[in-house]
Image 1 (tube, one colour):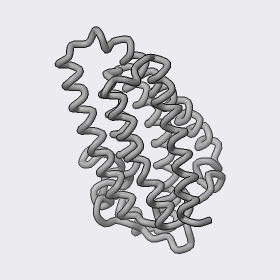
Image 2: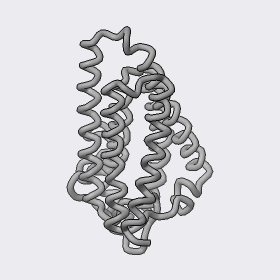
Image 3: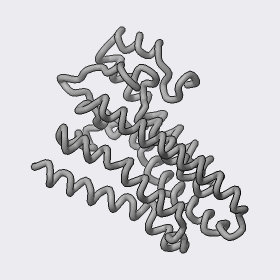
Image 4: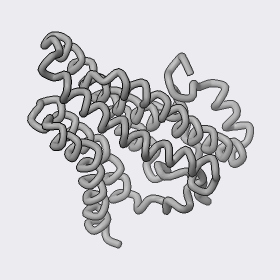
Length: 228
């Protein structure tokens, strides 16, 4: 498959995802004209374009069915939580935003917008840097024959910067739309989905790289610098 065709296929998937998560609920809840929604739509597109760039430059990702999280029963349940949970998070946030936009203090909306923009901007930067550091090793959870342990750059600070970028992106979304309920639900979804994913990934890397990976674990935090 040529790089051009692969890019087109992934772009179609991206457009579909944005339509389901943002455009459709925004239209249904009459919020599509709000600047926050327009910004989020463009920010999400920029964020996920990094995956398209990786696939074009280094080849297609491993099949979903070969992802170790997909292979395990606990992992499949975590993926169900991810799919349903993120869908509810995005729709709930837009619903609450559409109901409160005329009642919320403009100063509060401005502050939430600034905080949300900052979180999303940091998410995009972290995501871009992490993917370019991993290069062809950015993939689903699958150990390749030529797999190499990457511990430099942003990976010298946290072991899972790409997952951190997801958390910041979705948290920024909830913050911009001032939805406390969706923010709390997001925390639960990420704890189940990413918690399971990180545990599986670290188990596999420890089995593959042994003491080197265990030493790396001792010297870095899992997700949040200096905290966890």
